[in-house]
View 1 (cartoon, one colour):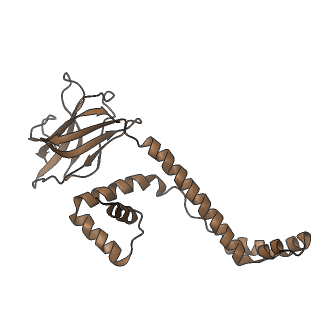
View 2 (cartoon, rainbow, N blue to C red):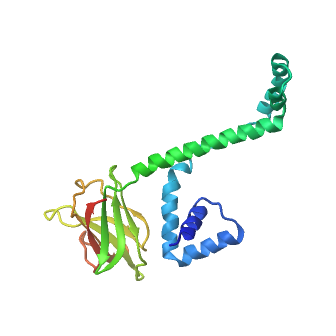
View 3 (cartoon, rainbow, N blue to C red):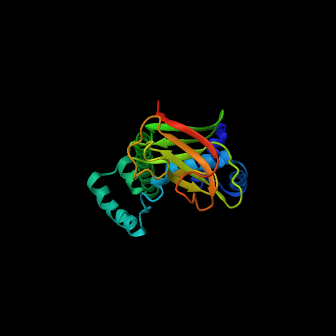
Length: 230
């Protein structure tokens, strides 16, 4: 994935593309699993900003009140370049827009910095099939765990991919996620003990509704052990 591809995925996730550029991104989304994963990752990064604040444009009544107050301000201050500037409504609107944009950029930048700190994984598990990496599990300090596919995985009709972990030998493997195709998946670890280093994760091929026994029954496609993130 080149830097241009990553930028295109981010612009698509933000809804900035139009016309042929948008159509091209949608074609790649359907045909290129790597590009689709990049879009999903951008959507996850931007998720907290989607509904953060509804836009509140200044209404006409506010601008009329500002204009009504300007002559009194001009008398109090006296003729000057500053007075002429404030009597120029267009300039005032440009300045207000600029200040709003600067505040938005600062807020988004601060939000990204905070979010980036929260989103650094504390443990990762790379799931392998021999020498090929099929997926990676990221676990975070707040208890979240997310599986990110790294390659396309063929899922026959009537089958599904089930994700397992082994919290202890005594308890045995526990299902933590089910999906009908390789995609970003939030894993369910909330009822399990705290994740430990070397804890096993694996993906097996199971019936579409999941393993009928509560234990892995199909072939193991990918597996790997958790380790502290660098």
